[in-house]
Amino acid sequence: MQPGHGETLYEPAREVPVYGTCDVLVLGGGPGGTAAAIGAAAAGADTVLVERYGHLGGLASGGHVCFIDRMTDWDGRTVVAGVGEEFMDRCGVEAGGIIGPERKYWGSRDAELVEYWGPRANAHRGVVCWSPTIDPEMLKLAANDLVRERGVHTLFHCWAVAPVMREDAAVATVGGALFESKQGRFAIRAAVTIDCTGDGDMFAAAGAAFETNRDDTTIHSCVNTSGRFGGVDTEVFWHFRTYDIEGYKAKLQAARAAGSVIRASILPREGQVLTMHPKYHGYSAIEVADLSEVEFRSRDDLRRGLAWWRRHMPGWQHAYLLESADQIGVRHSRRLVGEVQITLDQWKRSGRHADSIGLCPGVSPAYPTLEIPYGSLVPREVEGLLVAGRNLSCDVRSHNPLREVPECWVMGQGAGVGAALAVSHGVAARAAPVAEMQAELRRQGAVVTPPESPERAAVSAEPAVTAELSA
Image (cartoon, rainbow, N blue to C red; front, top):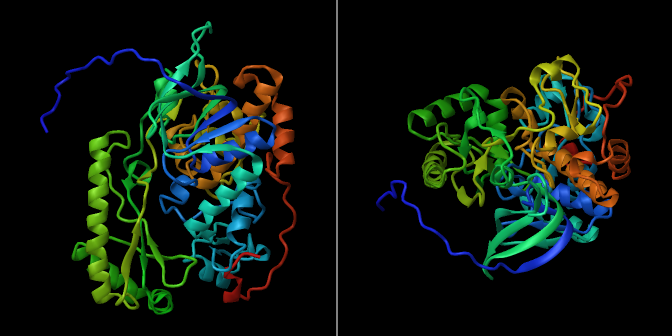
């Protein structure tokens, strides 16, 4: 293909049919978008959720981000609840749908418990936490059930391509969006639109200011496509990894020398493991040529890594590639310039915001639990639009913890409730009443302000393997 060298074409003007009108239009059915739609509908808004793939859950399901980051603070208290907690409860209903410690162990610093739960992604910095590993298919089903139970009108296989801008407004105001689909181009009008695209596609197209600076020294700027392997004797593999640590490290070093750079972690289903490696630097998350190259490169590395592990890793002799992820794993692209910017310095000083819509556990025990401000979801210039997910307003240093799945659930539910209340009060989205918003979020089961610190209950050091399924 020859490059265009700046050549342009002019599309003729055309009439676009209006598919429908709603109170709240949510663009993107990932963690933020699904939670936004559920929160808005539960608050009484006529809500439409539009997703370009054929399932909900985004990277947490289609992207195989099966490790749900911490939902508890460093004392084991729940700080992410609401929609996120309901998802985890439903994933845990079916035996084998989730891995994680029982509630009584959360916050324990017992060395034996930490040693047991650490490799299972449920202990960090010497503290047992609630950061469950889920079956991604169970999350898809749970999301399907919740949006239907709340009465959300959901459309799959549609891609939002442009905002509908209100011509009667004195300032730039979004009044819905244009979509492409198998049945052609159409529009949906809405009083409030929530950009949950992850990459901020809609707020960028609407003219809202954003930032793109990133940290290239960490995984913050990495992209990759994950994969699941089946046919692994997980008992043999996990015993080797757990009890022959030096032998396992030697295997990984030999694998790297041979060009195999995958890693493996167990999943809830017997015989299945996950790899979210390798992660690639130097690619743009919004340039199609880069995204295409990462898809090819990731699958080549999955195949190459599997071949080496089958020959050399205990328990992998009959392993096979079960599935590569439907969605590419993106950690950062655009960040909104919002009414409030979350900064790591302010977080460490206090982490408090009067307009909190939910919480994020401290990045380390030296940091308090962060109150996520509603203002970080509100563009400075554009009306009729909110944002939820990894494209929130924050500095680059605080972005890593805030882009995780639980925080996207928190932001989504907050944005959905804020949008619903703005519609019911007939005010701009930025003017949604904060006290009423917080009350509605609490009614929906969310935690809006950090819980008080009780005395940590003493727990048994018994690590009981039967505790792998959540209570």
